[in-house]
Structure formats: C-alpha cells, structure tokens
Length: 129
Picture 1 (spheres, rainbow, N blue to C red):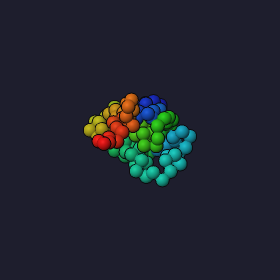
Picture 2 (cartoon, helix red, strand yellow):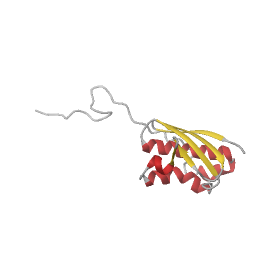
Picture 3 (cartoon, one colour):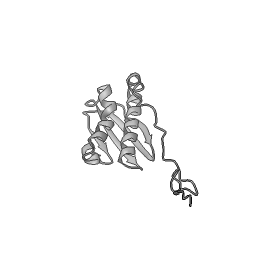
Picture 4 (cartoon, rainbow, N blue to C red):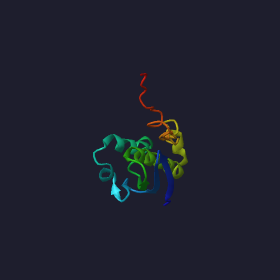
C-alpha cells in the first residue's frame, strides 16, 4: 500500500494531493468534494476528470489541501495535482493523461497593473478637446 504525494498549481492556487489505494473518497481541506465546491457542478467535473479518464474514481482515495486563489484556480490546481499523483502512482497512466493536457501546468496568470494605467492595459479615457 503506497501513499503518493503530488503538487498541482494554477494561477495563485496550490494543491497538495495525497493519493492512496481505497474506495474512492475525496477530501479537500477536510471537506468532501460536494461540501467544498457546493453547487459548482462544472468545477466538480473538472476535478474528477483525471480520475474518470483513467477509470480510477473508485480505486483511490484522495486527501488534498488547497491554498490561495479562488474556486476556479483551486479546482484546476487540484485537477493538476491529482493527475500528477496518478502518474506517480501508476506511470502507465501518463499515456492517457498527457494527450488530454492534464500533465501540463497552465502558466497563465493575471498580468500586473502598470503605472499610469487603470489596469494592466486599460488606459484612461482620452479626450481630444
């Protein structure tokens, strides 16, 4: 019985994921997936996607701690962490997850605000006269 650890990241979120063989329970920050994400069904599906693709949803238990960002970034960080943990658990699953883009860290982050601008790129309204 091996316990596998992996880290997933997205935007400002970091997910620490521990994966063990088991019945398919998922605990995030001490809560079940349904309690953690509430009614955000699309995000729940996104989190479960690596498990569904590899057909491991009833054979591994997941315990995760997610920090930073909002629910969207956290859900994607968790998805990335679960994917990485599954590959460490069983390297043969990489052939399934990599073509789906689950092993790649999404590097898009919020662009910083520039001086003299309202936002990162939005300028003040120009008045000709």
